[in-house]
Image (tube, rainbow, N blue to C red; front, side, top):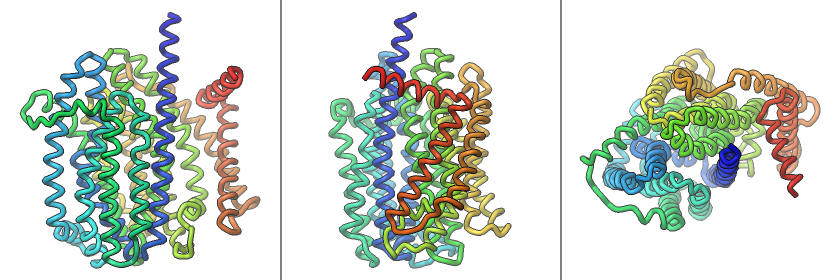
Length: 530
């Protein structure tokens, strides 16, 4: 009994350390991603900003359609389960075939993308919603971005394999390396001319090559098991492919919906909406990408191993604790961004006079609509990981298809209602709510593995959020309005953030939420040890 308890504590401690490592890596990655948008805003004028942003749309969509979602969600649990059952060699054969087949497929697609980029982007703008010059420049820049996705795929496959071995320290900082060289490309090459735009995207392709080499070298002891095996008729490969295809499609829904939002953004009369939409997307994905993604990715191999071992009660407890932990961190983030939307955008992106208050206001409006998605998408991501862990990959696909229909429909309805640009991000959030409800309802039908005590958690979190937002709104309006130079603005925004953290955490302690009380207890234990 005591031995088992000790093993549980060790496992929990190891998962906590792994989660913190992944979070730290994501913080560096997201911060460097912010710098990328800051440098783009500073180095390009409005036309070239939109062209640069639009150039990534189709290559990113192709990447997500063919490989993006399958890495963490198909390869990781499959290889992790094979390792836990002592069938590592068998698991590796299926993974080797998977990588070989998709590498050949991706190489062919990249060549097609380079040769026919002008035609592809012309078809994308068939309705004429975007500026024709923006589309032309984007299609030219994409000739360097299609090859990039081949190396991004190889890097992502390395990360998926290493995560199956729970080598999270080896994968945490790879994206930061990529972003560093992307920033270097923008700093050295970017400018408002066609040839400077081409040089910039060529540099970004080089960054992807370095990213893959870094990830391969750091994990070469494990990755040396790879062998090129092109055997698409292999039974184990087909089994893995059958599991991966729904994941590939459902994971691509996010990117397809971003393409849809960019399409509608181009229909508004003023330039700059495409870039503003990207900025708002970058900001809302900071808390979501750090907390939800880190917690979900670390949870995935452990949850898969528990389900394979028929430890359903442990699987339910793990999912419940991970879901609550992620929401405990993202809920106050959403409230802060709703109230402080423009100030947050200014703090992140306004570092020179080239980025105007109007640019910040435009992105701030989009951020208000996105803020709800910080919460709902946290649930969607964690629940998707849970479905992938138990091998039921078709459910996230169904939820994704609902989102694929809902997103453009809501955009049309809200725009027709005269809601303006915010229609796009509100439509995205409504779509996310529908996906969340679908996943939660279906997963909870199996009571053995369903998350527990969520209603009480949600009610208490809502009380804490309401109190935090009321205090923040009062402080923003009557006590410490944003004014002064850049450093003063950052200091004021940070002080408001501290107020939010204190109010939310104190409220959760008063309501005896385990997420807060256990954090305090853990801090006390560390002090006593010292």
